[in-house]
Image (cartoon, rainbow, N blue to C red; front, side, top):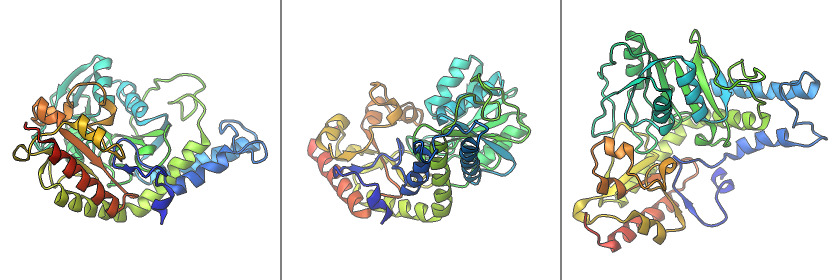
Length: 376
């Protein structure tokens, strides 16, 4: 079974797929030839004109096509060092001066917009963690940013409808599809889409920005003019090949992977009967369960829970903000008070999670939480 190849030897049950996914064996195999030494010449610079360089460039081209198949037609893929870089390239490179964003965007969007210094308005977000389909795009907005799947609570936003509304208002639509890429159909109406390889079973250290044909973007990194003049710096053929292989596998397994996580989600919620789900129960990616202990069943000391269950890897909210001491801005935006937000945990699972290990983890989470006896 493919899952056996990615299971840690430590016996750890890994339930933090929103932070990062295991590297698919197929992606690892695709990377290895491009890490070889002088004998294989797989290490060559893909921007060099000699034969090894052209071979490396060809591998990058194949990977670009594989990633592009996850995205709408009529656009181009620009490889970046991460999705964060891709989002920065979209925000700063678009030359937009006025923004409208959802309050539950990833920090890579929210902090970039703040750093940009342009005028920014927040779109509404309900207690279900969804931006309303009929949300009004403020007059004069030049760029709207709404993510496809929220990284903390898993809600799936109506991005196609919001993209149409943005276009009608004369604004570009940027979609952070990091959590939805390779799992859901792409946001067809978007103008700019950011992806991350390591969130779809590829390697860390590489992302991509898809740019719709006709949309003008200026570079934010200058130098040799590599990557279509938009992202100077030497590309890694190994990282590109791993990204491409992971994207091809995700497209092939999209239906099966979705069915697998939905089955796991139903079983987890059966076991976690004394917990409340944060965000919509229906408009969501089922591989993300952000839950809190219901008041009638007692509250939760998450730090103690994580200490008690050290062989289960899960998150006390967004992994990107862990350790900050601040309550999640996403949970705050959907109306949770600080104590309820801090008593929430996120369980993330996917392709390589087995039913027995999820059942074991959830049963132990339930027992450990019940033993605390802490009231909200």
